Image 1 (spheres, chains in turn orange, purple):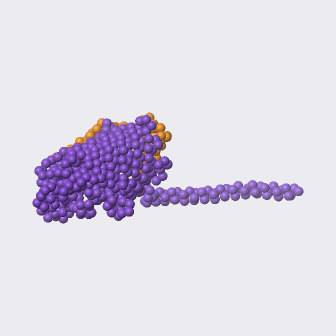
Image 2 (spheres, rainbow over the protein chains, first blue to last red; image 1 turned 90 degrees about the vertical axis):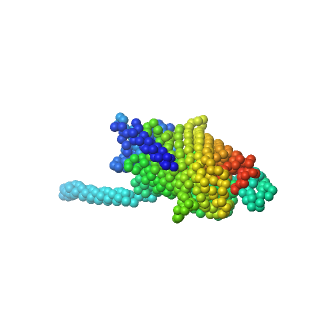
Image 3 (cartoon, rainbow over the protein chains, first blue to last red; image 1 turned 135 degrees about the horizontal axis):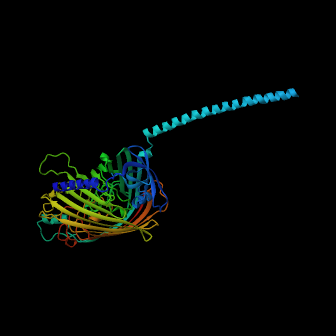
Length: 109
Length: 505
């Protein structure tokens, strides 16, 4: 039992460390925020890009990002992600546009 | 004439002088009114904004949903000739004269079992990063406030209703709390969450396919290992790892039995607890990989069941511990022909760690029975596989096929599964299932996920060993039940032809 708990805790620590120290961590150009979606615009079911507007929980500012990854687009199209969902967002500014790099519902059940 | 002209000219001049002043006066009056109205509008806007901020409308913080299901089952099964525990005891008490009576084989049926099930879900955004969720369930047979028609003495998970199955098998028709928990998100500004209460530990992946449910989120469990309404907690973490999209991990704890006041005597029944660790390294539509390890401690012999086919039951002792390991791989492939193909494979192992305790039934110590063994204490290892596919057509027709197999010593914690005979994934043997779902056309109104559908399916159980979904006593090959006394009625095979009409909103 103790070994199981110790192993579990070690695994949690390992995963946590992997998350904090992974190459996917925020780079200098990346901007992170947690916010609630106020608007989603997709141009029909075959659209390859969409824009989502989020209200930053900390500042209250509205941020509009371009979303072009298929996984998130699919979630927009079949309503797995909808307006009023809280999102953990990471984006970078490219050619004056905010381009989403990580768009995921805040975890929790 | 000149005089009248002069008067007219003078009047015109006077009018010319007076009119602009009048117009200007009117303009000023209008401007004043506009300014006044503007101020009022602005004040109203601020008032509305303040009102909105201070007291939100109910739709801003509360989500209401639910489901209703009508179901009909047509059940039949084959019972082999067997030696019952009661006949064995009578023979033993009678001095073991001759041979004990053997119960002849028979076919058992329940041609039409009608049930109603109602679910009501409430989710409240209580405050920033704090949410509350509850799910209420009512599940009853037609024409009864008991579960006599669906209850049998064939399998341990269906002899009566207990805490882990309340609301998931037909019961007394009262509304029960199936889930109630609060969650704190974004702990320390990180993707970490903590949740406590009666858990969403039922209907796990990949069992959601045949139920036509959404894929469980990060609160879900491996459906081959756990389908049990637990009270407990979860601590989870969902890191942003670029190479592992959707990855998360969580630690879970649940209490399966709480003993209450005690005197620390050696015969006390201890609390039964379960610890689980779930790691999902990859979670996308095309590929989901789900790993789970559990440790169940101080397994009780019987749960608390007020009314069962074996009478009123409650734990008499703890039998030992059980470890489990499971993996699920799922994939949803779009545009495979005209539709979408969902496939999954799930596998699991269990290992028991029995102690020297034995249950007591009706005041009789069963000294030759323990945790998955008879006689001598012995650790056992079991395994199970669960394979399936569902093809979703654009016509909203979904066709599914599933197969699962459990080995001789396979044991799981899945009594709340949505099967009438017994939880099919806990079967020691083979189960085949085919089903068809037809969703009704029309746009959803109540929510994005609202739907109505008809489902028809067929299950065939082919049992190799006794004791499916029962951890008390050793499994016995079905061909040997005439020589080994059986507490429950063994079954060789079972069938269930079922149909449902459901709404989810």
